Length: 431
Image 1 (spheres, rainbow, N blue to C red):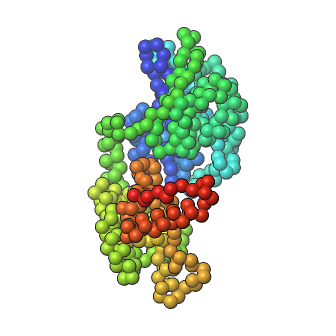
Image 2: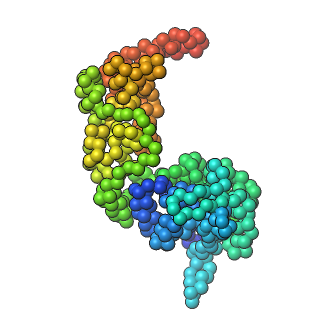
Image 3: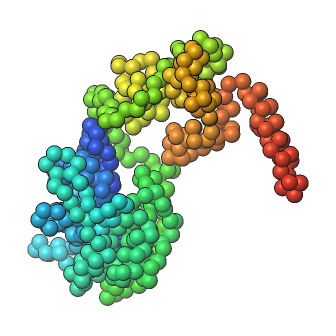
C-alpha cells in the first residue's frame, strides 16, 4: 500500500494487511523465516497482526519480528491474564522529511494502527506450548481510542483492518477519523477505493497477487484533501527482483534438504490402492492414462526442484493427507503422479464390491465418485492454473473421448427435449 504523493516528492509506505504467515507445521516455520527476510529486503513498514500469524506460536512471531526488524501492530489484541496488549497499538512514520542533529524535521507524519476481528469469537487459544490466551476486544472501540491518541501527532491516519471489507466499513463508520484503510482477511478485492465518508478503503485479496495502492492528496497544511485507490496485478510484466530470486532459491534448497514428511493429526480411513490395482480390470483406461500429463505429474516437480515442497506436492500425487496415500517419495513411491483414484475416488470400496464383498446398497456407482468440475478445480484453481477450462481440458484426460462426447451430446439433447418449448435451445456441440 502506497500512501501519498505530495508536490514533486514521491513518498510511500509499504504495508501488509495481516496473515502474511500461515500454518503451524515444520515447513511453515521454515517458510516464515524466508518470507520475513524478503519483506525486510523490500522495505516493509508496519504489518497488521492476523490470527494466522500466531499459528507458529507467540514467541516465534516475536522472535522473527525482532530478527528481521519488522513491526506487527494490533490495537485490540490483549493477553487474557494481564489485560496488556500483545503488540504495539500504533506507530508514527515520518516520510519525506530529514534529520537535523538526529531530530526528524519536515515531511508528513503518518499514524498507522491495526485492528483484528475473528470470525468465530473473541479469544485466541494457545497454539503451542508457552503461549498465553489472547482476547480480541471490540475493534471499533479500540480504533477509536487510538485515533484520539494520534490526533495532533499525525497528519495522515491509516488503519490496517484485518477484518474483511464489510466489518472494515463498519469500523470506518464508527470511528470517523481514518483517512485510509488497508483491509486484509479473505480473498475479496476491490479495484478502486471504496469510501465511507472521507475514509478510503481498499482490499487487495489474498496470496500477494495484487498490490493495493492508495494515494492521498495533501494541502499545504498537511491535511488530506482526497484519496484515490487502485490494484496493481503482480504478473509476468514485472521482471524478477534479484534479491527475491536469491531468497527463493535458498528457500527451495532449504526445503529440499529438510525433506519434511507431512504431519497429519487425523487421517481418514479411506484406503487408496494405486493404479496397479486398477489396470488389471481396466487395461485400456490405464494405457490411455499413461499418455496424459497426469501420469507425469511427479516429474514436473522434479524438473522444478520442488518435489519436497509440501505446498506443491499434494496436487501431483495420489491420496495426499489420507490413510495409505502419498506421504513422501521414499516412503510411498507407488503413490506418485495423479493416478486413477484422484479423479474416481479411493479404490478400497470399489475393489471389495467387485471381489464379492461390501454392501452395494450403501455404495452407489460401485463405490466410485462422480466426476464434476470440483473434481478438477481442487487443484486447477485460478491461482495455480488461471487458464484452466473444464470442458476443454477434461477432453485431454478423459477415457475414450469420442465416446464421451457422443454420450454428453446425447444427454444435452435429452435435457433440452424435456424443457418447455419456450426454454429449448439448440443442443451445443462438445468440442
